[in-house]
Amino acid sequence: MSIWDHIGELRKRIIYSAVVLVLGLVAGLFFAQPVFDYLVQAAPSEDLSLKVFSPWDAIGIYMKLAFVISFVAAIPFTFYQLWLFVRPALGPKERKATLRFIPYALLMFLIGLAFSYFVVFPMAYQFTDKVAKSMGLEQMYGVTQYFTFLLNILLPISLLFELPLLILFLTRIGILNPQLLKKMRRLAWFILIFIGVVVTPPDFISDSLVAIPLILLYEFSVLLSVSAHRKRLAAKSAREAAFEEETLDD
Image (cartoon, rainbow, N blue to C red):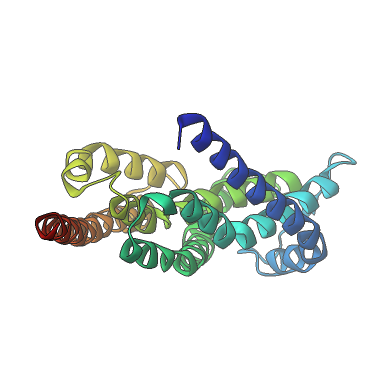
C-alpha cells in the first residue's frame, strides 16, 4: 500500500469510530439522568448544594455525561478499528495475540475509573471542602464547576490505566521496545508524578497515593513490553528460518 492508501485506510477507521461515538451519544442521552442522580447522591459531602448560574448549565452537564457514557462504550470498538488498521502488517500469531487486547481495554478503563472516583476524587473534594470551611466560606457550588472538577480528575487517570495495554500493543507490532521505554523512564516518571500532583490536593500523602500507582503501571508496562518483545523476536526468527528452509528446498 502507498502512503495515500494508508491515510485513506486510517481515515476510514476514524470515520467508523466517530459514527459509533455519535450513536453512543444518542444512547448516552437516555442514561445521563440516572448517572447524574447517582453522582449527586454518592457525593463525598452530604450537604452538597448544586446551583445553575446559566440557562445552559443543566443542558451542558447533560451532554457532557452523555458524551462520557458514549466514550466509554466506544472504547472496545475504537481499539478494534486500530487493530484492523495494523492487521495487514501482522503475522497470524500476532493478529490473534493483539486481538485479545480489545476486551481488556474496556476493563482497564473501568478499573481506572473506579480508582479515580472512589479514591482520588474524595481526597481532592474533602481537601477543598476543609479549606472552604476553614476560611468561613459558604459552600454553594455551580453544577458546571462541580462536574468539571469531577471529570477533570476521572478522565485523565482512567485513560492512563490504558497505558499497559497500549505499550504492549505497540511492542507487539514493533513500534516500541523495552530499551526505548527504559530510556524514557525518567521523563515518564516526571510526567506521571506531575499528573499526580495536579489532580490531587497539595500534600505528600495524596500525591503519593496517585503518583505511585501510575508509576507502578508504567513499570508493569515495561515488563509486559520485555515479554512481548522476546516473543516477537522469537516469532520473527522462526519465520526467517522457515523462509530459509523453503529457499533451500527450491
